[in-house]
Image (cartoon, rainbow, N blue to C red; front, side, top):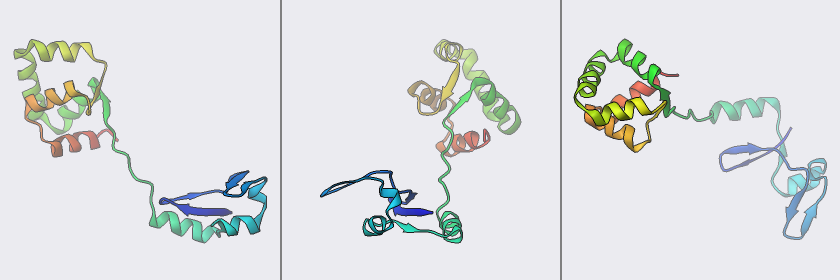
Length: 133
């Protein structure tokens, strides 16, 4: 298979390729042109080795449902759930927020306010969201 490493990714040759001199039609069928512009033929072993050395980054989850959050807190962080229940009972603003959203987004300003109210650290938040995987 013909590939080119570019910006930390392996990309296949395009069907048509634009150069400074113009377009090369059926580029992917032209080995000489592909070599000239940086593509090469990779063996399955090279391909597999490249992906072992460059694993796909794990994109951390940033959203959850309220049910997922409560279940996670019950199972893994009961002290945070107790603090949340206390804060909920005392704050109409928190009650309104909690009752008006369907999903929680860790990057949302209102969610950040909730997290700060409970005194949850970013490390704890990372740990909570890692449980959703």
